[in-house]
Amino acid sequence: MRRMQEFARNPAMIALFTALVLTGCASKKNNLPNNAADLGLAGNAAPGSQQDFTVNVGDRIFFDTDSSVVRADAAATLDRQAQWLNQYPNYQITIEGHADERGTREYNLALGARRAAATRDYLATRGVAANRIRTISFGKERPVAVCDDISCWSQNRRAVTVLGGAGS
Amino acid sequence: MKMIKRTLFLPLAMMAAVMLLASSPARAVVEIDINKANVEPLPIAITDFISNDELGAQIAAVVAADLKRSGLFAPIDKAAFIEKISNPDAAPRFQDWQVINAQALVTGRLAREADGRLRAEFRLWDTFANQQLSGEQFFTRPENWRRVAHIIADSIYERLTGEKGYFDSRVVFVSESGPKTDRKKQLAIMDQDGANMRMLTNANDIVLTPRFSPSRQEITYMSFEGGQPRVYLLQLETGQRELVGNFPGMTFSPRFSPDGQKVIMSLQQDGNANIYTMDLRSRQTTRLTNTAAIDTSPSYSPDGSQIVFESDRGGRQQLYIMGADGSNQRRVSFGDGSYSTPVWSPRGDLIAFTKQSGGKFSIGVMKTDGSGERILTTGFHNEGPTWAPNGRVLMFFRQPAGSGGPQIYSIDLTGYNEQLVATPSYASDPAWSPLLE
Image (cartoon, rainbow over all chains, first blue to last red):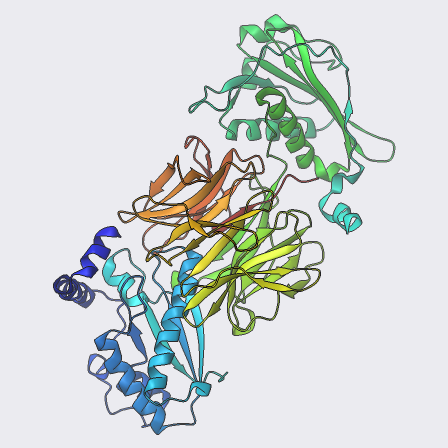
């Protein structure tokens, strides 16, 4: 944990670290693809549909350990989300914030909320009306990937934009 | 309130303890110094209580199991016993027990009263001082026999260690089932030895961090009911649930004040969590912290004057203490790594915590000024300590890497005597009750 944090203070190390993580991911069966190319489904989804959003836009972004900072790669995904949501303004959305299992339960609930709030705030700056957005934190209670290494934990540190949630 | 409490949770309401013998208060020869790091367990003979059914052996077995699990006693195999106790009112043949090195001897008897109640009596003997140390008698409904056994074990523990026991207590926890990606969670309650487990909620909603009221048969916990993660109260007698307060956001990490009149918890607003109390009578809420940080896991000192909590206001999670009104907030943990889930000991002298350092999760204790840190257990993932009512033992949960689930363990304050608390399925978030009344 400490080593990772020291890691994270050095940008060059972050790049290396990310590369290692991604390499690790490629060999994992339970990785969720998060863009159309991975799924090979581009073009099959009706524009404006749930599937269109999930497949062609990307419904989730990932975070660094203990961080709620929207990374550059995540910002690109959120830019696409905002563009899509502005094109289809009838959708209410719920942003689910999640944490990996390498933290205590209470802190992770708050960390998931922080990530959801950061995601909401970013979408709001891109023109998505705040009253369309509801947020919820699941802490570490709903991982998508189950394993015992960093490649897996990195997929669980996420914010997922879910269409159709009631606005608040 | 007290009346209701008795009917459901104090099935021993009719139980009366009577000292059998006002024996001369001679100084005991047998005693255990439980403050030593690794105590040599005291050999003790626990004979089957004389009874016309199997209950006599069952009660003796529960007493023996309690004492053995404490790590302070070594019950002797019944096969080694020489004297067969036939009259528990008479003194035993002490030399028969000395020969097998029984430092202490427990004898007892069960009988049914005319009204159907069970009468249970026991005597504790110091076999090398040739004297009775204690003797008590209880009346209860027969189905409460396990509680009678725990009360007897507590009495023996207290007489021989000089400290209150903890066996007549319960643990509320989260029972877990199903795959990790869709884990079902239910509140459950069991006796501290794992017996009499029952579910308190169904598996429809995620439920977390149950905590006992110090004064009522009530717990506070967090539930995702209705898609809104919030703090609730649950009446154990009636199953009645109630939302705690009407806060504009997620409430979590609840705990009672020592007088049971307040719930203290975190309220999440945007990226920040701050600590609030709600008075359960007046419904008045009070904000205690106000930072752009995650302030959570509040736990009162036993006298109610102070609160320990965790905060990442300094960058990483560390432990802080403040007055009960939020005054004088100061950091107390300064070790390597991060600290979370602090819980103040019922004795007031220590704070238990989860520590993350070097990729490991440990359970430890420190003095209330942050000094004297001791790690009790360390590994891939240990989390969420809770204190036995006498402050000598802790439970926590341990999560293995990968797809498995957590289990609850107990460990002595000295770091010795770690034991699995067996549950039918995965279990997490244990919270120990006060001693039952």
